[in-house]
Image (tube, rainbow, N blue to C red; front, top):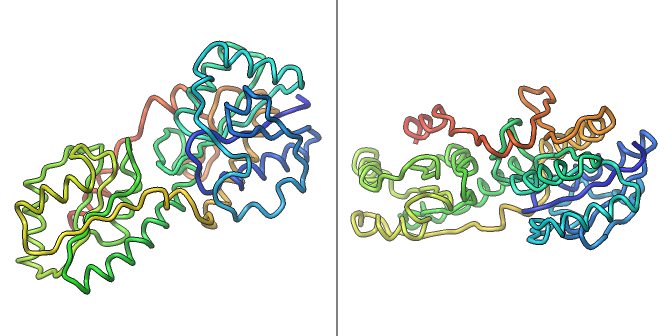
Length: 324
């Protein structure tokens, strides 16, 4: 293998730049030519590829977002789009790709490598949702949870000052990992996640218990956006009809969780994954996601990584019940 490329796809995540940097410099270290593909699969179809040198990734490890930009590509879902992408790769002599992204990115890579097996793709898990099997933590998750935690800490200050009950919505359309850990870290009264059915009666009972028994003068409920009760706004409206001890407010953190400087842990993990991805390509691995489980690097086939989401850790749910 002489030429490889790297791209970021799907939702951006803090730490992607650290991973890009590691891919480029590891590839150059081993004598490979490295190309950066702009805008993920869209750039692959449009032939937006640029040679990457060591200086191309200087001073980016601390930056959020992705210098290669990202996009969601409907054209790549078509055989014609994938054929165009393949032709652009072959005319440049690119044999291997490091794809940094999440569920959708790896679904596309899985289909592509089955259609064009002479192009080898290895993935690095870049998603704030932490919803891929085969790694303890995905790139972006640690930063997103810290960003959410800091924002909720600030909201708690004003909640305490005004005797308010806040319903805070965090990202997590299909997975509640951000909601669950931030709820523990901020001492929230309750958490609602997609993995469990929401029982509004039980939630109201819990809030009433805290108010009467524990004399709490304010409260925080963390709601993942994919919660089955309809998100923070609808849950707050439903609770307000039955529970009038506090003034109820809603906060939606939204895309603030995607941006910002990656944490130290994020930068180290993303750098390790990027380096290991290049090594995997050189060793002949293909169709696998690089992960770190119990501090050991593991390879997980794309199909397994995207089809088997981890269940919510019951111990973490128990912590909410006992410690709040």
